[in-house]
Amino acid sequence: MKGKVVYLHFLIIFSLLLAACQAAPKATESAAEEKPAAQKVLRVWITWGDNPAQIQALFDKYGAANNVKVEVTAPVDEEKILPALTSSDPPDILVLGGGDLVKSYAKEGLVMELSDAIATGGIDLDDMFPAPILQCKQGGSLYCLPWGSDLYALFWNKDLFEEAGLDPEQPPKTMEELVAFADKLTKVDENGKLIQIGFIPDLSWSHTDLYVRMFGGFWYNDDGTELTANSQPMVDALLWQQQFYTKYGIDNVLSFASGFGEYSSPDHPFYAGKVAMMVEGEWQTGPNFIQNFKPELNYGVAPFPPPAAHPERANTVVAQGTVALIPSGAKDKDASAKLLAWMLSPEIVAEEMVANANLPTSKKAAQDPRFSENPKFKVFLDLMSSPNAYAILTTPLSLEINDALGQVEEQVLHTGADPKPLLDKVQEEFAPKLKEALAP
Image (cartoon, rainbow, N blue to C red; front, side, top):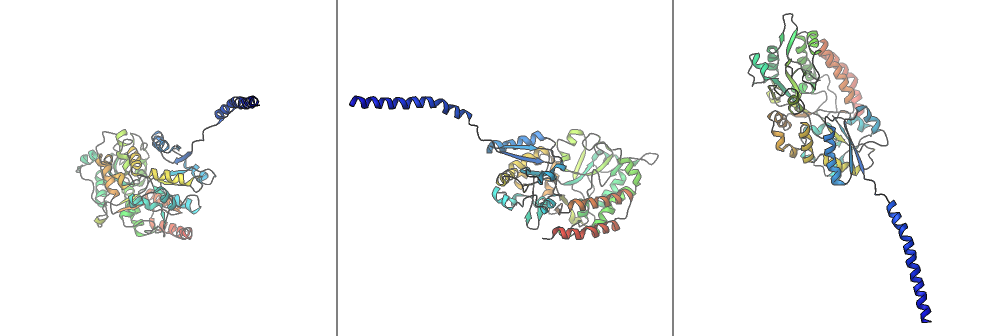
């Protein structure tokens, strides 16, 4: 009996071993068929990007540190933005060149209000310079956050100043002196045709936002809740610009300007010595513009001068530039919030803005010594802290109102039109529309 029991035990054990051996290949085969979980992908769309490879490399650092893949598309055609925001598959982060459209997107519910994202990501709003963040505010809400900023200042050609008998180290100190300097720096040939001009106020685009601040106003009131398009500062700003066309002959100036070279080329009119003074942004002082196209250019940079009657408006600037937002349809809003917080951290702001010669919106980032190495760039850096640093105010109707004001500016400067009746029409048309757009 004992031997039979032992035999049965042997058979049972043998059978179990045999079954295990037969099952083993199946287990191995099953393990081989298993696929690793797909890596999370976050998509960032940026509407600008002179160096997309540099931007992608920056975001790769976030991907490596957080075991995600960040796909950057830059530059994105702006016509694709609205269809993407209204689709079921928008990007996780959207970066725009300015805040003009953000509040209209917010009105349609296409972008997130960022209070929760700021809390989730631990974003330090106190570390941001106050001026650039204002373009993102609507009442007590924030629909975007600034990622770098642009300011404008006066550039002057020192060699042309010297040729005209002006001190090459002394830019004009008032707007009136700028007009006088421009006269001395303007040259015509024997036929009265312009061959050099001192200043063109709307080169290479409109700067009315800066000039109207110098005259003490804007086309909105201080909190952006009312339209003030036909205010006296608006009239004064346009008439001040108009004189640079009418005194030399509008057709003469326009004909001269039609021969200017491309913006990003050695033929840019300031690089080529055709324009002696210009209003331009901080990026001109970096490696991609003057240093690249005309490194031998002898030029200076200074804050744009105030009116003689208002010296307290010295160092007036209007901050604008890149903003980042989260589409309402983003699939994982917490992941978007964390990526946004990383983008706005001082070390990342410093790295990206140094690479593109743009101004940091983070106060801590601004302390990076690389921003102060170039004294011309430092002019702009110092202006960021100016008590006269304003925001480019935006509303849900910014695009339409800006277009209307742009048409007025063109008529005033390029045809000699009286600005007041034209501004009155803009005020009459858009003031009630703005009130309606801002209604709760």
